[in-house]
Length: 328
Ligand code: DGY
Image (cartoon, rainbow, N blue to C red; front, side):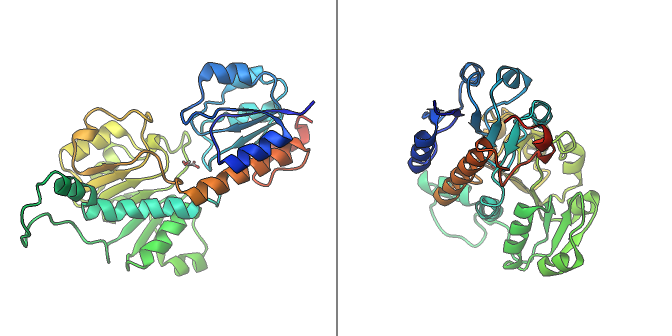
């Protein structure tokens, strides 16, 4: 009998067909998060799981997954999976790094331009028939060219945003767990600074850290209070990195220039009050949401799953410490 796998989200048809030919595949073809109870029931007889960022793969799920060998996450972030619990049980976990770097960096930059030049607000005004005349002092935004960009989290995506910022002659400050090499700093014209300096000097602050115990509420009321009154906060990483209530209050009081958000603390719920504000752009978590990137992510997740289930080392394994005790 074919091996059984569970795929919790609808993928490009070609990938779903490929997986269905190879495995007995149980696929959630609805474009909505897989039901928790269905995950708990469905995982029992499966050897492979191709998971979405909306699935909580915790001990409760893993305790039922007696046959599970491999979790291939569709996404670079995997904070929804209890990696320690998976490793203890000998289950391999992979993710999809790299293939979504450009798409996510593009979106971060789109938010930088959109919030400072008031694109969404302007579109709304025009559609509603409120554009009555041109005037020198009407509907002004702030220029991006030459402004200082602060990058928090200088991994692949942070670097890709910094590269794009160079075309806008933006000086770059960055903060990261570790410093880049001198040559990388030079190439990106990026200066390593502490958080306080970055928060108080940057005109745009863009977040590119994974969600962990260390980064939860990395940006709270204290950090927001250090930002320039004209500065903008951009978040395309994970919602809980920002204390959304504190951000709401800061935006409501006009304490900073504005924010561009693609992710939320209790996604998809928004902190009440956020939608009433004009100085924030709210997107539905589409950082990696291009046809090209989502195809590459699906392909990569499928390749990882196939490698893991055929006893190989998946190319994007995130818990290599599991290898000596992997389930075969
Ligand atoms: C990721 O890969 O972590 C993204 O947030 C999914 O779009």
